[in-house]
Image (cartoon, rainbow, N blue to C red; front, side, top):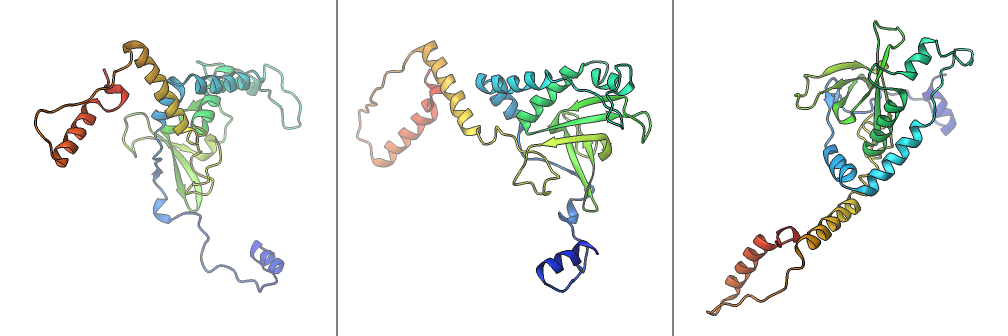
Length: 254
């Protein structure tokens, strides 16, 4: 009994199989790398580099995550010895980083971008991986085909779409925070937790910039603009617009 007959019986209806294949997304999106409109550069600059609170929170979780050791177990649930290839792999994911360094990168990506990717390098298909790499999420695009997540494309910074490195789905582990607006019903990109706090973070950064400017240059005294000739409303409005364009905003006060 297939799923349609089971559903029909549960609803007390006559089983009617679908006339055509059920697809999760439009076919015109298949076979090409999907792009995201989210600017991760702003998350990095405004959220991580310039905001001490966000940086402290993200790094606190990264240090806590990396402090938990990763252990290797065999198919029967036995703890593998340190000399086992899998134990050596998770201890030194690739020649340049340890497990703690890799896990810190993954934690920062996950909590800043809302997702993280691990790429497994294999000498040949269907063989155990020989190295694990943390991929920057904004360089990874998803490829869909036949109603499934078919694979990924890794596009280096500055490279054009379609010129990236194809990655098989079985060689990539993708963990993501839920994205309620995902066009691919959970198979797409994750949702950054900073997006919900973006306005608050922006206000906090602006307040910090304002206080820095205030202490560097002091307050600007208020004043009155006087003209020797009478002005009509249109001329007054034009003068106000030009004044605001030149001196509007605390960034232009000095």
